[in-house]
Image 1 (cartoon, rainbow, N blue to C red):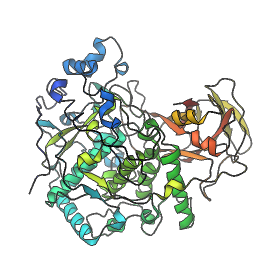
Image 2: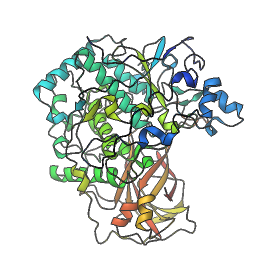
Image 3: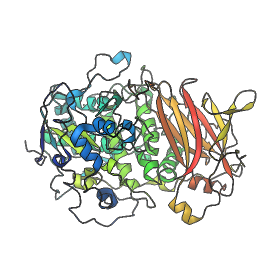
Length: 610
């Protein structure tokens, strides 16, 4: 069969396979060819058309001219490794900013798994060499990923044949379906430690690594499938859950006789059941189909329009080598990414397997269609205008991962090479974006004047009880709902200020048991203590925090294994829509929708101008 891969030029031979070696596994910066793919092509014009696939923003690849320069941090990495650089300078490891480095596949250890999954080995096969990824020669025709509900019979036959061949490969083959599923488990459940920081997990969720990691993941999965059927034009489909016709499980994944089928899914959510993008873990939102669809579109509007106006809000918070995992995920990573995972998984199983838990999610072929739509959201996001541009931070552009390609070769990839899908040889079929105009209408009672706190950076909360509300200070467990008045740094901002700087609600969250599904909703200036889910999504709804069940053992150097993260919600457009722009502060209501009592602690809350 023909190969889809252009031969890389840099090979790293791994010696000392059982230990992490910075001198052999991670060569010096010059050997890694950091500037290999930057600055070679003129930057095309930026498209602002909402319905087009636009990854061609010049700021996404050039880092304002800095990416070609030798960075002192990279030189230190090449000389002595991240840990040596940090300690030589006399500072704690987390004080030295650096890109997250490629983990050594031979240093992968046991993942932290639920008790019913003990004995599962999520690590890839051992390897003796790693080669650097080289962007392929641009194809004359891009591979086009189609909506799963619109593919024809010819595509279905091709896809099922490719999946059958992948599932027939030996489990020791890194191209096999079981090994592809293990990739997610190893990167998401503590199989890898950060290079140079053995007491810290490498975690690709809840940070700016989420989108690029999963883009690379799908890229190699797609290439393997195409290679197995000798079809370089093959492209995986995407689950188009952001449009009405795609808001059910795609039927080609629900045939029990198909290799695309997974029996470990929620039996109550089979077609024609309409997907609930705001899913609470139970079907409490029992609305007519058209009302559910309207709710879903409103959720998409909130997450893709209101809550995505900066890279930090959409892509997630910076995550550098030596820093604690989970600094904060982006808007769509929380919801609907997390809610679709859990809605698809089997709620009758202990850990919502398969899709509802990180360790098992990629065992379901539908996982890849779900993440293809997430990947598409990244492309769509950059067409929506304003400040929606990729990070230019070199620590993001130079972060790296390892995957196996269609030839079973270990490949080192970097974020900077995946920001433009056309350079990777694929794009997405254009489809309607019905959520772009799904802004909810504010009611006449939504403008509730908040009482400002005495200090701009602090807030007090009223815990909802059946008898009364009492004022408490943070930190505070979120057992049902918490209402708090938060002062705004600046009111009555000009249009220019609003276009330039986003007003952001920042919530520090501590999840004690992160192996259970957790979700809480955020409401702004809402008069209801616990807003009902038996109606359309309210204008006061601002977004949701979601934790997909997973486990990890070494979250930070303090031995604290809680999921400590930061949740951010964009407020600028919402405050304007609620008519509260002249108010000194806003009333924030957090409502726990899923999770056990005492599991979620709100550590602090404030509003920042980002």
